[in-house]
Image (cartoon, rainbow, N blue to C red; front, side):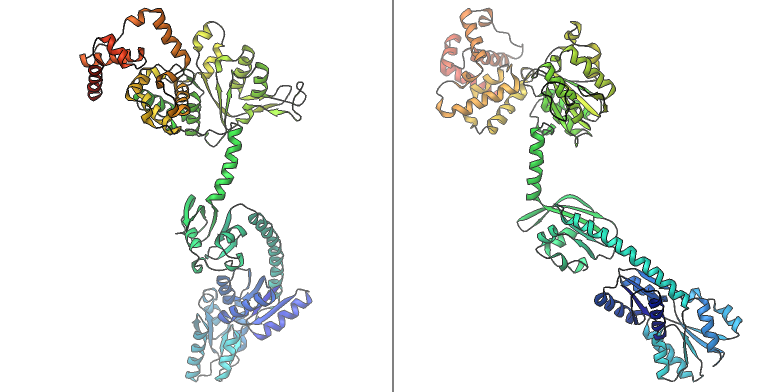
Length: 630
């Protein structure tokens, strides 16, 4: 429906006739400025008016107060000339009462000269100013006619006997305004349909959504947001945000500054908040209760973990104490800023995938997938189909619809090729082409797909020797080994062993007192051929036996270690007769001797004391002194 705020009664009659002839339904009320605003609100409330036609300054006033389209009819110079020409029949000295906004558009000097009249311009801002001006004119008793634009001027002037003339609008202006209003109404209807569509999308969102316009008035509050606030959406829509006293709402609005993934608390609940500022008071707020957010997040993460598409480790997860690993990590962080391929060297169980995941999570690709594949775990034909994918019917047992390969799935992220030194020459050739061209073609397919990924590969083999023996392609080696990272074995960084032991003891809930100081020293001296993986397995064994095991804890090390110790005793070889120690102070060399002999005697102090020719008490005192010096 179209509403019209008419400046005078004759305007109301004329525009209703025009609308009837054009078959445009309208509702019309007479009013100006504040009175016009009251009439407009009544029409909106009672007749569901969506567009309003008004004249001059009243139209400007309504635009500042209402959120619906206002079609303005301008008061032209021609309208004023016509009215003043009628008024000069009473007297050539005329008082023109006009709004201060409109006065700048009227060429009074030209009109005065053209009509041979004197015009006294009186400016007003509100209805009271109009009344005051009319009473001032009446006091002069000069019988000057008054020209104005509003019905209230004619009423006030008539009551005190002052002659007045209203500036009338032309029929053409009214007709044009109704046509513009009709176009605006049609546009409004289309936009309302879009708004309903958008509202249905917002209502079905997982997040609570609240939006405010430039005046700080709430325009959107979906059901999720209303639920969290404990209200109905209609309770706050079209209300000013500053008037909403709900504690959670106040925290959501905050200081109107932008926010991303901010955690706010309200009572015993917490929420993840995003706040996008569009203007001084205009903004969109989305929020979600952390509990539901974590449930969804955990479901997604669980799926990614199962599919190996998610890197869960970061550099902070790497446990170390010494400078060697500190340098390795510093190099890894530097490599994370590059897009070049990385080859990670290290023995089995040293944590090569942990390093690869950490590099990925430090890189620009951290939001992309991380896909790990063990090249030694799959036969050649299966590995090929996993890496490159296949089309439907490519081979017997091929999945219907085909299957994307891991290179495709790694698009935008990182692919980790573990045990790269074990792939066959045929696969080496295909892998080289993918690395060179960054393109992949599925098995049995013809379509070539462009892919964007970074390769981090790892091996425990000496690939240089493999290249020399022609077991590994030289060109592929240099493609993979652009950046080189070597992770030293535990036996080459014994300073990290103790903190790793303590970490695994805590992880598996083992009381650290179960491992005596003597056993701890033996473990630090042990070479750990299986590195960190072997150490964690050892701690798991300790956890499993707990207090039920009556033997020496050191005997829980790998059977291979026990067999080697046995063999040394049985064969009485040179290693059991001689020691190799580093030359240092006497106390230091003595400490080395006792530590090594303790290992050879499986921590048996009585046996060691007998070999050294001293009492068990003396040995204990020496060990205690060495511990204090250390």
